[in-house]
Length: 442
Ligand SMILES: *Cc1c(COP(=O)(O)O)cnc(C)c1O
Image (cartoon, rainbow, N blue to C red; front, side, top):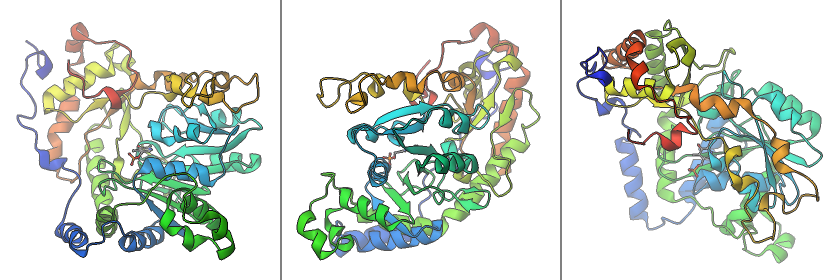
């Protein structure tokens, strides 16, 4: 029997306190707003959704916002809106959630993956630039796990090559890069507002832009009842009320009503989370082998700390894997630490080999010129291939209650100090994606 709970010792935290983590935070205003939608008899209307859009746009600092029934569809509309189509390529980081780019395939486009920076987990601008071809139409920039992507470098490259920048803000609503809100850098941004994200309204998504043409295309793509708002009488003769994408992307009004209330408290909530997470780090920042991921630029932040990860160096613990280290932490605290991040998308054959639509050849190259090797364009992505073995996820504290966070600090210090107890039980199975696999049982 050792010191560590995983080897039979006594746990640091006898019982997990759910209140520290409960999400989303629901208040009476949200309850009332939701009930009002039910009573009003207009659940499929757009009056509340439009109000939510205009307040959301003002809050973020964008001219237009268009609500969607989920983030996936908002992102797909954004890709359509910038004109991504057959034979075009979109560059996206390999390490992200599938919805960042998979919809490109439905538009007849191909996805080329680039690598991430091993210290920030964000798009590596050099890797992005290396993958540009004459067919590159757009780049999908994910502010991954709440950290801003390096927008100065990315915008400079994209402008030089005439590439449309789309921001996926699903992990960082309200975040800032050098003082400016995320989602206001590219031609268009889209994001999830689903219930596990830090801006949680149930199921929902938002598309934002300053460009009326982008807004119009997004409406025509998937908002049949609003086409009349964006088209002239002349255009309506052809368009009628038929969404060109064959899609219906309308947000449910209860989501919009909750969203209006979330806007009232979002900045406050993310500030509280930021205090809590920084308090946690103030207690462990001197532990060798563990490093916080946080932007260094003045005016940049990590809004909401959604799915936040930190760097774990197995060499500092004689090869103890992040999986074993995470298991040891969870044995002390009853959960909330995790290992790895998203499975690298370039490992999926969906983007290279699968004939999804019956074109008689892989969908990913259905419209590319003969001889283009889409897999080779992504090439080797050494950071994406190895990052899942080198990151851990922090507990996601929603309130800054030092007395309740202290046991988590103690757990980290205890496991780090006694890591040699883990050597005999070390699990070194390669990790492909912690987010997808973190619910696995040992
Ligand atoms: C959650 C998520 C999405 C998809 O949003 P949904 O609302 O679940 O459809 C897209 N991109 C990223 C990075 C996400 O994490």
